[in-house]
Image 1: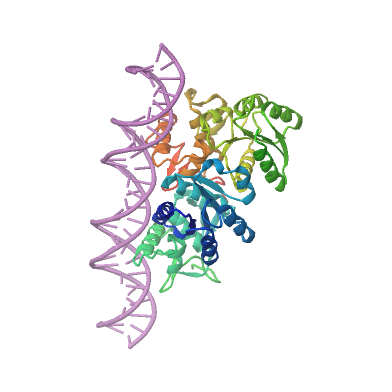
Image 2: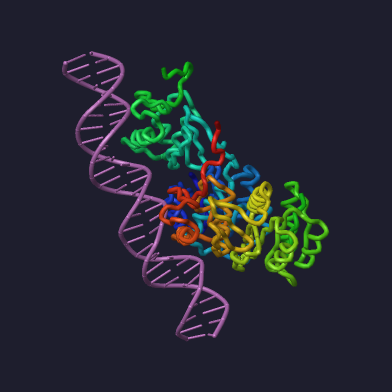
Length: 232
Length: 232
DNA sequence: CACGGCTTTTACGAACTTTTGAAACAGGTT
DNA sequence: AACCTGTTTCAAAAGTTCGTAAAAGCCGTG
């Protein structure tokens, strides 16, 4: 997830960058407002942290210009002088949060996540879905089959969700890694197989002859069948 | 939908008003606590945003007086950046959320809607609610199980309330911190676990095998089981 | 300003999950 | 049948997350 950090003070800039990168964000940096705008156009980060006081174009102005093009992307202001932050500015520019310096690594990460969570598409996942007799409740990290409950880990739910989204399709292994593990993560090992194996043991009636998750050799896995579903 | 905004700072008051009106709410405003009470009697808004520090009758006091007449209407506190929000006091008074200034338009709208959504279906429960055999009396800061009484702190009530609102769901740890501790709280520690642990010792029959509050590893906690128990 | 009662943090073991490497296995080809 | 390729399983190593006791921190009281 790309995040833009704009601050003229190299110490702040770099420490924020380091904190973000340590948590798996890709930080793009800028030294001043104009550079921020330029980087914004190039990278289109999913979130911006803007220092208010910067040489040249200041943070407010950068915000205003970005808002002209995109009124969605979350913007978080950093400021050295708390007194100068004005509530009205926050409301009018569409800022999402303000953080006063000095701030801790934990604080900025927590707020940034809060902002992302809030800005995230308010999509309410459907309450449950079914996969060959197994009812999965994503919000509850649980599933049910024949009346008995099975707890699932977030990863397992993600796997089942992906299979459900593409029922009948052979979903390539790589897509699972992408979706369930995160983009640039690439275990070149038996990780996925292992998860599938464990999952089968818990959700299949007969794990030796899987019905819910079937293997598609040299491609990946599939749930359900194209047309003509008969496990006969 | 009528909303009352009480704040002695005209800038905040007017910008919040504008933000609300832009989204289709009818904002009624008040400059201080007494005016807020007066407007409350006249308009009976469906939601209140109260600044904590106001000349004369402060926000907490306004809340207390309104609660004497109506323990349903959602109340949301605004607080200036410098003051510590006393979440415990707020929870005791029956506050529904806290917002720290300065705040973004999106933040206040998001929180306001969240509060409304929460309050809408199951209005503040009559007097009590049940959670796996435990009857909780929020107003009395107490619970009852098998006839014996258990005293609870406001924080504990808040935790149980959140679990009740989302029975069956795996409620993320962060949601507890947000709701039960308030903003600006970034514990890097086992604070939540500690509270859960203490709570379990007092409310569970067998704290080693919790039934009321179960943990959902890597997510948070859950109470109860699947909501739609049978899609049969 | 010490004391008691809370709450939060620290510290660390226990429990659980994920990853990995090795080896057995299965399907399809030659 | 021998081979090649990709999959499954196993067991153990790594890595996380959780629970809790104990220490530290807070706050109002006497």
